[in-house]
Amino acid sequence: MAPLFGLPAAGVVALLLYLPFLWTTYVSFTQYDGLASPVWTGLANYKAMFSDPDLTGALVNTLLWVVGMVTLPVVLGLLIAVLTYGHKWGTWLRLPFLLPYAISGVAVGVIWGFVLQPDGALGQALGFFGLPGAHTGWLQAGPGNTLMMIVAVTWQAAGVNALLFVVGLQSIPGEPLEAARLDGAEGFSLFRHHLWPQLRPITTVVIGLSIVGSLKTFDVVWVMTQGGPGTSSETLALSMYKETFVLNDYGQGAAIALFLSLVTFAASILYLRYQLGDAREQG
Amino acid sequence: MSRVKTAFLMVLGLIWLAPVYLLVVNASKSVDGYDAKTVWKPAGFSLFSNFGDAWSKAALGDTLVATTMYSVIAPVLAVLIGAAAGYAIVVLRLKRGFLWFVFIFGGTIFPLQMILMPLFSGYANSGLYDTRVGMIIVYTAISVPFSAFVMRNFFTGIARSVFEAAVVDGGGLFRIFRSIYLPMAGSALAAIFILQATFVWNDLLLGLTLSQSDSVRPIMPALTGLQSTYGGASLPTVLAGGLLVSLPTVILFLAAQRFFSRGLALGQF
Image (cartoon, rainbow over all chains, first blue to last red):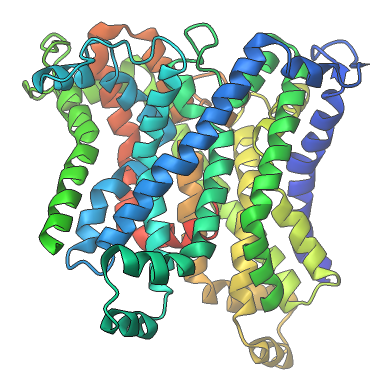
């Protein structure tokens, strides 16, 4: 009787997630246009990924995204969390940073596409303060366009990371901290020697999530530049979509998808270890 | 020191709110009154007529109806299916329960890119492409693993004696599930529902891949369409569209912030 309750979940997951996963894996080793039968070509699609200049460009951009997302929003999130934690108005001071998180990637793209127009809001603000760069075409050349889009997603993601770090701070027992304070630890030294070591687990989760999220970067880029001009701001997630649904090169798209999955999986292990470890202890 | 901290946070906060300010101010300008050289200055208030334009001209109206449907039905189905799995694994002590759990939860580990192409082909061959039923099915499937994960953890926290007493009282397994375990899980079910409804509402990639007509296509792909068909002249309309589609999730987020922080810690997004 018990399997009856588990079957719907296992069935729907098997049919709509695992089965497609297996088919994509197979197709990634073939030449396939979605119409004729797939022809086995071994590792050809994978080799193309590291030799075709458009795809290696996307690979470099994706790497930029990963590096950008594990630094900017993580450092900012940590800063916001530490500064607002225990602050009288902490919840209110955090709110401006959390607001963008409730907005979809598409909306973030629409807003920042507008802000970054040539001579748009950012340009006008820089001009107003007499700063250089007022006439920069922010999205018109790589790798600058990728960097600006990383800024846009930082705007969206920093608050979430702050929230996660606050959860981490809340789980630190208060008494040893008080003792450290009485011993004269304060400011950066208190953070470095007493808070930071205890934030390690949550930091792992935040960084794991950032890596996984950045590998999948699609929405914001799709809205702001469609990967262009040319392919200058394309990410692998975008290349996968274009190869498959625009160029009908299903095999190439599948190879990119599998590559992304493997890297994602490796990064997931970072933080899933904690989650599944917990689950195993409980059940 | 404390004052420096507060001042720093307030300045940073203002910078963070600037794009929101720009969105609201420029989405409120009339299409004729919009001037690309003075985007920081408010000018007039035509927000609602711009909403109207976005609604009718870009057919956001149709897509809003469809997206609302997806965002309600798919999470409800996923919550029930996931709860049933959690119940089977924890309460009914399904044989090799941990394996079942890993199998179901494993469904979320790989990125959507991995399933797009087969789903597109499969949907095209089975007539599910560009149908509302098709969209509901795929959104449900995507939401099931997380739902099962949370429900399994939740049921683990319920005393075994509850189940034993219910069996002694002569309840069938389905009735025990429906009238004892589901009602007890109210808050967990609500949390999953809110998180998954937000995910479905904000989805771009699945909608882009599996639909094309105005009455089926979800809101986010429709909004990207709005952006590319309109030129710079009617930017206020595009921005009004962006604001319009963001309102439901922002309101939901502000009303249910603690659910979000809990979901985050579980690694959903």
